[in-house]
Amino acid sequence: MTQTRYDAAPACRRFVAALSATGLSRALAEVTVPRPTIDIHSHVFHRGLKLASGRRYAPDYDAPLDLYLKQLDENGMTNGVLVQPSFLGTDNSYLVECLTATKGRLRGIAVVDPTVSPDELYALDRAGVVGIRLNLVGKPLPDVTSPEWQALLAQIKAIGWQVEIQRNAGDLAVLLPKLLDQGVNVVLDHYALPDPKLGVTDSGFQSVLKLGASRKVWVKISAPYRNGPNGEQFAKQAYPLLRDAYGVEHLLWGSDWPHTQFEATQSYAKNRKFLDELVTDADERARVLAAPRELFRFSS
Image (cartoon, rainbow, N blue to C red; front, side, top):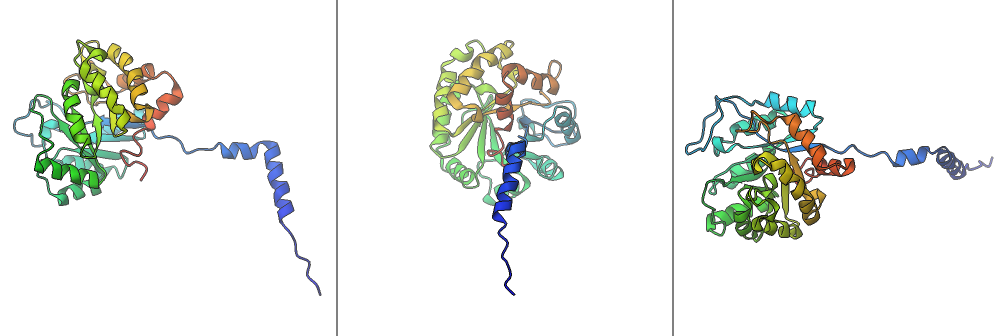
């Protein structure tokens, strides 16, 4: 007996055509994974932690992990980045503890000594650390061309980390080209901190704008209040210039929670609301909030 072979292709084509006619196929095609909303600058600490010698400042209150996670949840943020506070120095143990406890929701930026061993860096990497911070406010600029710094920066590059810097824009204009020569990615804190009296006309800030072409630099649009009493006005002038120079994907929003030394006038919700005023287009704002995904390894 001869068995007739059934060709399913025509039936499949008719089914797909029917889906198209109802618009269902178009709807399925438009389904996308929701964009993350990432806060890339915050600090956690408590008074039981050992403070670094030579610190410029130390808070007299606690900003524990659970309180930070509450801020994220209440403000619709999917992820956050914990930046090691300068007053805790190179003891990153609480940072690592918090990263471990949150099982991938957070990433970390550590503070290390230039002579740190590769093993220590790899241990931090496994915990969820993705870069180092140089808080150079009130400190001499490091000689990043010295052998110990070159060795550290080579390690940073090899493991795919970033170097975050807090320093005034005038000095960044001198320091950044030397760091970029080492091939590392660089993130600048708080709009690159130009002279508050000069704002966007600061020659250092203008030099920072030119570095957008490198595609190796990112700028945090965070903590406008750290740019003087007219910080929000400055931020609104700076944002379009930074966007044109760097592109939206190289601008990163951070809450700066718990707003050390500005606690009386700032809150997480206030800073998140200011982002809506700063970036008024909803799609552009969503791109800013999702921009850290690759750099901070939230996609892995």
